[in-house]
Length: 126
Image (tube, rainbow, N blue to C red; front, side):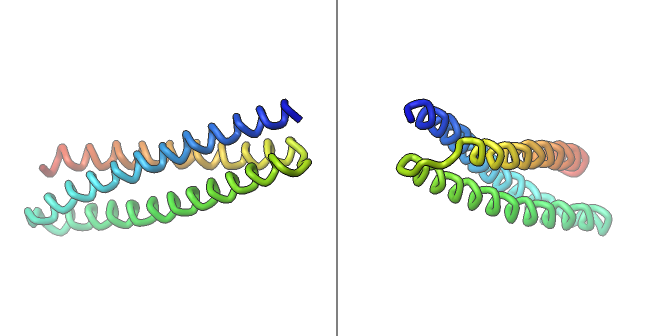
């Protein structure tokens, strides 16, 4: 039982790290949105505005995915809390955790790709 609690504690740690990562990325998106507004004010032409709208749409979508991931993290934390009092198999948690881990990896990569694209856009248009 002690090893199961330790294992669940490790899973909980991962969830907390991912939750913090999402919070950080959310604050970055706030900052990037402010920069996009600076570009929009300048009225640099329709091509720039089309790119700007594309970035805004990607940010909206990214925020939706962040919300979904945060929800999954909350649900996983509830499952872990219940498992501390029940006799659930560790394998189930580990398998689900791996799926969430893969989704987080993909999301983080996509976030940083978007961030790089926006930074290149700002260099050209600010």
